[in-house]
Image (tube, rainbow, N blue to C red; front, top):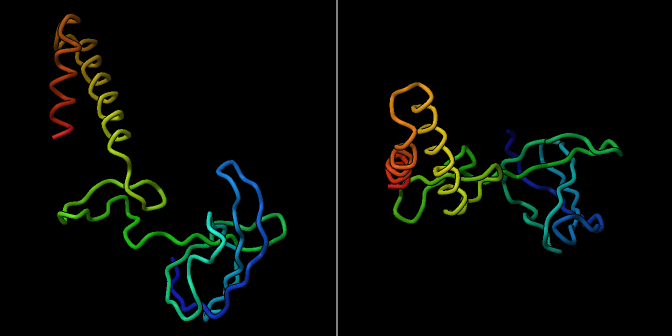
Length: 139
């Protein structure tokens, strides 16, 4: 990840994507890097003279650097209002509670099934054990 001051921002058109209209911007940085970033809004995400962290994801078909601006805490966790850590998605945005609970439920059932296969619990107790694990994971 690089960190540099933005020296120039230029609108670079728009296009239709699976998530609606995307707006493309060319960012130039004080360290000499030039690249393209796409945003859902018609205004640039960052302005001239802002110091930002960025990654070069790849190059597009035209050879332009594709820039990603990770959130400040995109290491998989970000502080919530209470100062505790909560899981985030790959862009650093908080995961929805339903996503986490759904994955926990799936994991709990899979683990309980593994215990039954290993003859640690009876098949009749898979759902009971899965509920115990799911409750523990969601507390």
